[in-house]
Length: 184
Image (cartoon, rainbow, N blue to C red):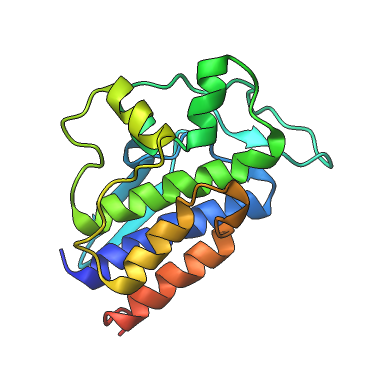
């Protein structure tokens, strides 16, 4: 798969996240298993799925979305922000203002995984990952180009308030798609 195809897939799922956030909905379980990818001829299509734990954060409309967080397991903990791990460990609710930044952290980990083609925290158990994330460690992104590395690192910053919004993240993914030769 070419760099343009990888960036295209990333900008597509990030556009889905941007649309969700624009409508006041947080995904809450963003991970590769919840991104559905299919090939249509020479192009690829990507969409976000498994919205079972999504949160409606908009006070202006009713929602049938559930109000429980997914359980952390060996798969989802790889994409869990430090603040999410913390509330799970303390068995307290996540502050509503952190749902979007938690999604953005997961988006950064997913982007790094997609571009590096390497599973984050490979070979590590759940508790080791929790200790690493809570200790400030992040998966290696040294193999990525500078622009990609900057975007991934911006999305998984320790301070949730400094992570880019979904719209900025998507715009930067789309910019990289064009920069590597995307769009005929």
